[in-house]
Length: 160
Image 1: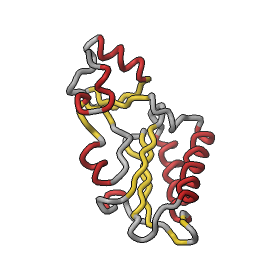
Image 2: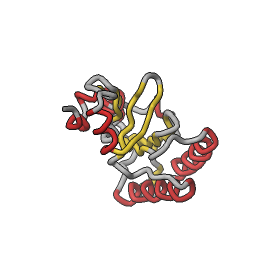
Image 3: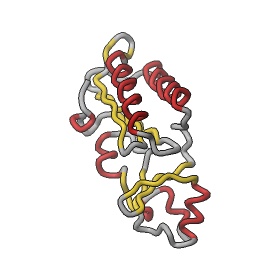
Image 4: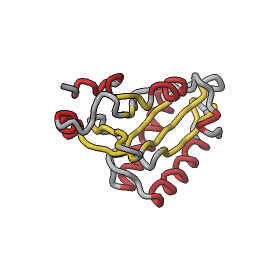
């Protein structure tokens, strides 16, 4: 296992956003399960050089350095099953892409896209509000484009 920070820039990446802020105890449980998962994670019998992290008590991030071994369809399916098991165990949703995470002052908030549209209409969020682009798929994209102003995101359509 490698720390997320030390993954190469071309590492393949998946970001799963919770539908709610996780407690510290939930984060600890997820991290323990995640470390177990990636230590056993393999593709066609080849161990994967991977990292696992929970960021801001909200985002589950899995990365794999495919220079050592490529993540196959089966291994990716195993990671999805792992994340779904986390959902069931902790009664949360990590696959709802219609949830928006954004920064308000120094706090990260989560809401439904429809509620985010209302916040934009009320001027509570604006084009410079920081949002999270969970569609990034590499460590370099994560480093440069995960936290972006609303005007530079796919959610910019909520701006009037």
